[in-house]
Amino acid sequence: MNKHFHDSLYYLRRAAEHARLGVTEQTDWVTDRVRSSLGRERVPEPGRLDRVREDVTALERRAETRVFAALDSARDRVDRSRVAADDC
Image (cartoon, rainbow, N blue to C red; front, side, top):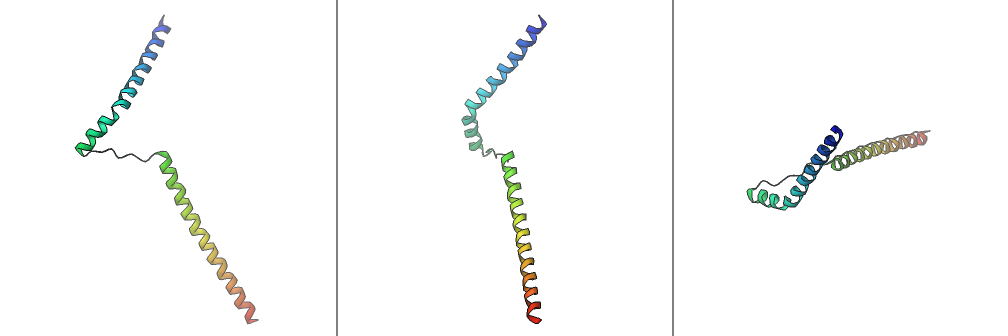
């Protein structure tokens, strides 16, 4: 008998959570209107995708900087070897 009460309590909690989500979803436009009229608009927090995107762009910038530094270094070495070859 205890198992049945446990199961019914689980499904009751689940139904209440789904009802809360449904009511929230249906009244989102009202809360957004009230917030905007009060000047308290929601500022969306950056999600995981935004953080990953920022990390990727930072990595791209670092890689680009390293590539340009390596390219400049290689050009300098080539120029120095040409000058040394011309001096001989």
